[in-house]
Image (cartoon, rainbow, N blue to C red; front, side, top):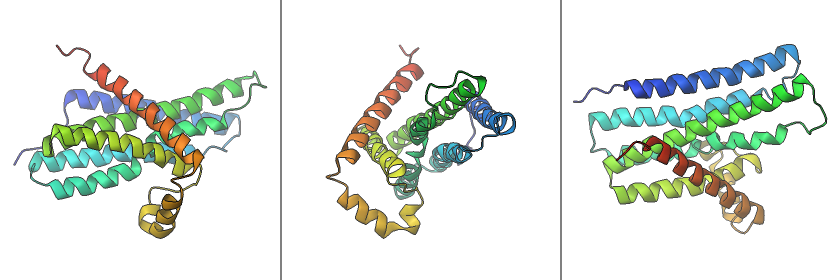
Length: 221
């Protein structure tokens, strides 16, 4: 049995993500203490949810390191990962809480950088989890299936952002409110807003992932 361990480079990535996440939370605390604004306290929860896909992939890597021949388990955890994956790009929609350009004071600019920090680190968490799970799919299945899973995940994540922001569904509604969720999904296929948001967010996530992928392999020969 192989022993699972995190590489030095992977640890550096986690340290960077952790520091950026810490900065986001610190900016919120600063806003709460000095500007007496806790309106966006829920954004901290959203940041935690953006980390969940990363934790799921880490556990999946541990499974794969012990035994590659676990396709059913990998598929089951992949579905769980997919339910939480849209939470990462979802925080981009919290930009709706940006103040209009009517205040040039320090609280205005602080609020801007705070939300952008939360959105940036959450998006990176999601994209990295997608990159790592794609490697798992390639190892457990095939490169072709891995690409199909990746493209499908990106498309479904765009729809997941729509369900979260517009219809206010959560990842756990798949388990605790499956019937209302299923009924809405069936009736949303002709919804112009659903189609537009799904297409635009899926395109954005896909291009962002391509950019991340190319940067990771920048030094490849």
